Length: 174
Image 1: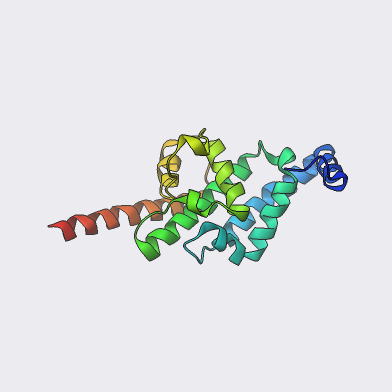
Image 2 (image 1 turned 120 degrees about the vertical axis):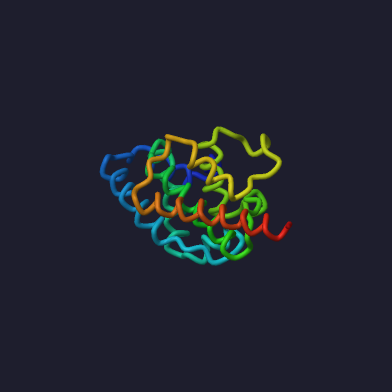
């Protein structure tokens, strides 16, 4: 968002809107795949994971500046869900459960979570919490996101992790 009182920011925002060329959009479309592959969560907190991946953090800053051009991009949507899926996988691997993304809603994570809420057609005040694991159910049930083979493999891995954790929990209860 920009502040209309700040003419410099307003000018940059207007310039970005006027420069929505096909080349700009195509260059981002190819970078979405590169940057989602590059993202490797290293912290329980989604925003900290993004910040620890400096290239991804800077890339999201760039996306935000060009949001008016990219908001309809299917590749942006895929980028958003892959980042969230990788964060959830990190949660499962290290803590054996998902965590509330609303508690991590700051910095560039706030932007990604906001984009995810748009994808699932929810507003933050519609939900008491947003578990990082909800991304799996969304990806397993939606046709809106087209995953490539490596992204499908990641989803399959996370599905298997969930099944294994559920199995372990049932065995511990017996």
